[in-house]
Image (cartoon, rainbow, N blue to C red; front, side, top):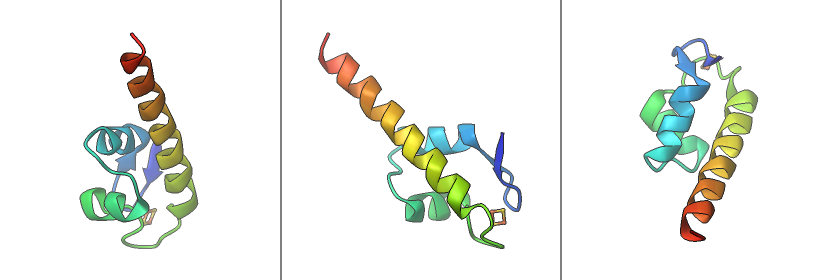
Length: 66
Ligand code: FES
């Protein structure tokens, strides 16, 4: 699903950025350009970032407990 139409960024792009170390909106802006133009995507991008971070942390915690 597209999150940022101006830059053509999808939720998968954001998840991938999180896997590569993005943890803040600033990281998404510098790596993907999210919110770099009209800014309408800010709320949805933040929600997607938070969800991706939660999933990433849960996955890491699961790996550690094995
Ligand atoms: S929709 Fe993301 S900057 Fe316009």
